[in-house]
Length: 212
Image (cartoon, rainbow, N blue to C red; front, side, top):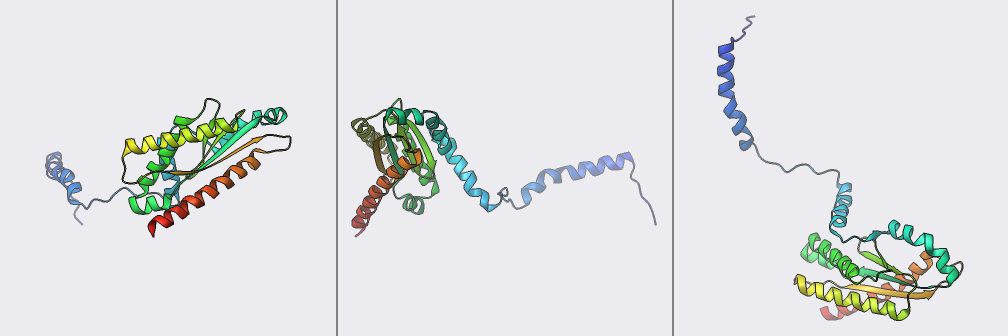
């Protein structure tokens, strides 16, 4: 067995000959995109990316934390409150036809319209997915309707400004009530959601008729 150890001059020459390969080799190898994490994380990452570009609306937990401290007082006062539930129309159709980025854009536009119309004492929140809620304490039926009309006008203006190949719309259900002892936030939310879904079904039926 012969053991060979290069001297310093030979090592220097070897390094000089190998160095260009270190620069060229990465260019010759096939490029592959960086690996994504597990598929189950995709929805979480995408949800985070949407939240990052949304106007500053509360989460479901955030709105509960703001309303809970004043709820008992509002019930004792028998205050009139407004619950307005929103749901983006035809999100699946937008995603299927124009891609998920278009769906993200539509969600953001609804959030912008809510923020642009929200009264000073109102609290807006993204409850999850494409569903939103606005809570207005010490309001009236007239003021609640005024907010809904303002939201619709703002959304129309945003649609014109963006000038996309599709129009973003939302179904809206408004529930206005005078609170009493024993009434809960979830009870009122259930009523506004129920009214919103009734409107959503009418919008869905109108789209079916347009497609015939």
